[in-house]
Image 1: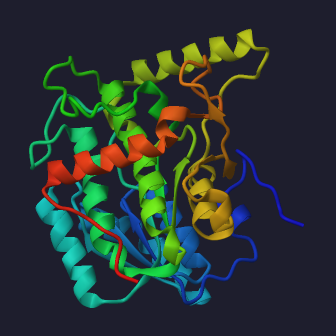
Image 2 (image 1 turned 90 degrees about the vertical axis):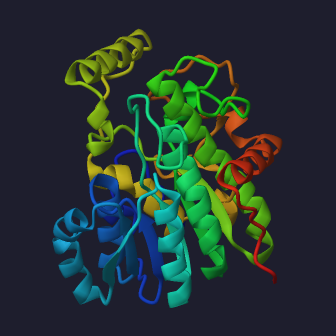
Length: 330
């Protein structure tokens, strides 16, 4: 009988009894919060983890315990430098891993930024779209030849995708006023659409891609939000929940927030999660683009799973980064 998990499930819950010895998994953003916990949990079950981080010194310190926990299970955790807001760094990191030649079973695109002030990446892209989407777009596509047949890609998306669809005509807010959460929504929708199109392009060799929402977790991702903004947001959510007769909102712990990532990566079946959006350790239902739902309700907007939209974003992304990507030759 298949075990069922939910919003309160932790990484240790979903990985109970799972032996990952021999698996090699890449996780981005292994310098804080969900990335560290994701790497820790997988390594503690025997996986060999490559953790990518912009600040290697910080990552080295914060993963010290995780590396120790990995040893008894036969796992490991090594680190590599990666700045997703700089395509020179992205390409250099990918080239190093390609030269090394060791394959990966899973890539988990965990790193990201949220609600940043107006800004540009090193390559002139809007910060959130450039970091969350374009950085991973180039990185994962360059590493696609290293993905084992039957491998998996997990994109960290968000219920924030409901803030906005991608804008293929004005991705950098050149003609529209910049709004931090609209920009965040666009980048998270892009993460889901990337999974949809990557899955289509690679499923012939058994490689599947999925997107996940970790839930509401207090991590460094919210560094650009003031405490007043956090408080006001929670108050708004609680008023909506109260009107529906539901209990107040509670943040997830970090192990609960990372649970859906590891579930989608190594526990769920590929057919279940491929080209889908997951939250609370299950595949989410599709909701209409105009459906009124609370920020903490489950559901993925139709536009985020639209295959035509996903293909159009892929073409636009290739144009923006100046590279074309095709599936590896079988």
